[in-house]
Amino acid sequence: MLIQQLLNGLVVGGVYALFAVGFNLVFGIQRLLNLAHGAIFMTGAFVAYYTVAAGWPLWVGFILAAIGSGVLAMLIEIVCFRRLRKSGDAEFGAIISSVGASLVIMTVWQWISKTQIVRFPFETFPVIIFRFWGLRVSALQLFMAGAALVIVVLMAWFVYRTSFGRRVRAVTGNEKAAMLVGVNPNRIYNQTYFLSGALAGASGVLVGLAFNNINYMMGEPYLMFGFVIIILGGLGSIPGALLASLIFGMVQTLTIAFLPSGLTNAFIFFAMFLILLIRPNGLMGKEEAGALRGRR
Amino acid sequence: MLEIDRLEVRYSGIEALRGVSMTVNSGEVVAMIGPNGAGKSTLLNAISGIVPAHAGHIRLDGRELTVLPAWTVSAMGVLHVPEGRQVFADLTVLENLQLGETCLKSRPRRTTLTDVYDLFPILRERQAQLAGSLSGGQQQMLAIGRALMGSPEILLLDEPSLGLAPVIIAQVFDALRALRASGLTILLIEQNAHLALQASDRAYIIDQGRIVHSGASADLAQDDSVIAHYLGDLAGA
Image 1 (cartoon, rainbow over the protein chains, first blue to last red):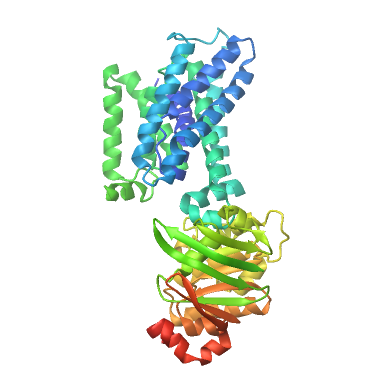
Image 2: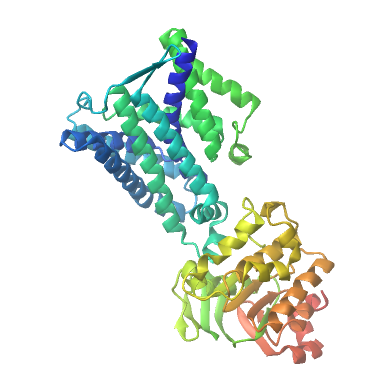
């Protein structure tokens, strides 16, 4: 039972990782919190649903969801953040404008879905259960864990091992110097937001499949969880977000399984509190959080 | 090669440059000397597209640079080593140098990683280290090396001696001498007038946003009165 729950938690954590890594990527590069990330995630789920509902196979929906969410995130940066950044102090302004974007996107989907909960048709993803060593794992869970692992590893490789990643990190560290060596920061921002949004969209599809419940509010709890995860993992740290997501997924699953259900969130936030007491910058964060604290 | 015509730059109403005209010919090292706040860094920032020009023209081989963004200017081979080094602190020395190639795009490569390492051997030793962990002098070498990786048509150097120990300054200027001997075109900004005049062919003196004097560096170095007049105590620094 315990091992089964740990396994379930790992799968859930993998999906959180997709969500949180993109969230953190954007924070890492611009020091801005994109609070529309939950709405982008929800958009991914809806795009996949309507694609499947229109008769296309799931993989088409998956790809369209990733692309659509990526483009949406790119637009949010251009419309909501770019001018604010030019004016200087965007830290607080971006929070307000991205909440605004989030409300607009949610309202649009509420209108399209007529405030209904929609579900993927039965067997959109084949229901196959594997049993071994007394454990049960569905094909969907395997797919989720696999997709999360592959995408997160690809992301880390992209950021730390390719020339694209070098340019991203250069812009993150020193935008002016990056321009002087020939990097166009706006292009890097477009690409980074696209990646971040595509990851959110992909996790939206996976969550939509796993819980078979797609509605215009579904992004909100994930935004909250994502927030906890990137603070736990360390602001701006990709490996930190991955580690914190897996821990978060397992803790959440275990508390749901073994404690009264009302205590889940209390327990999670208590655990976050404890970890931050011991490691104020998160599990793998550098002085980032400290720097923010110092500026207040 | 680089031609600046009546350039004016304003920061929130304050005139930082009031009609600066100057030229840098191919293969020449030109020094721009002047006291703090005279507009030296502003001039380089305007050339490389970091700050917008309010009036006037900046041309490279007749092509207008004035309205281009910084990444396009560097892609044309105008490479700026900014004041205070501005290396990418969280990236390794090697990654910093690799980023220097970003602006190469369509231009042919003339400087290789080996050339940079031969010029600054310490960078080869430290190539896997984070740039932020280097000393000030090593960061200055890295910043110059990073610009060289983009095979500059013209190198803009902002105060390479700033905050460095005399022995390190000598090393940096030895490297500049080698670059000069190789025929590289350089516009050098310095507060240290004697150092700048030794390292250059011609020099301009800038004060309060205007060019107040110019001439061959050898002549200016002889003429203590000019330097004392415009630069005061800085002359001997």
